[in-house]
Length: 92
Length: 92
Image (tube, rainbow over all chains, first blue to last red):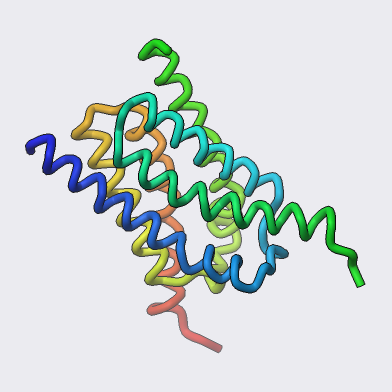
């Protein structure tokens, strides 16, 4: 398999895992309902995605960089809602 | 940053994203309750993780291979329960 073909496979894999994350992410962003999420687990996930992004940048691997940039953007947005809902929102 | 340090960063990132996936995965495996999962989205995710694993093998990147092996094992198990619950389990 050529380097080019391996890269294409990487992009296909990255698209699949990102696409599978999208519906839940969009639903959470739209409704801002984060009750089903664990703050500690989501913080761990977001930090991990940031780590993967830095790893991809240092490795100069575009597949890892692009996939994790998209996920990090969505995960950070969701984590912000979770933090806001947990600490700032007054319970009625 | 040396190659060794970059690899360590990759393992840290991989550990964080895998650890964040574990509690939900263990809960699903223990209770076998897959009602909250979408079959199409979970199939897409599992296929994507398989793609990442093959990508990592072809790239000879141990970080990608190990992280995605663990996730693929858990995701396949959960997907099996989801398929069983969707198509085989008789509704009472």
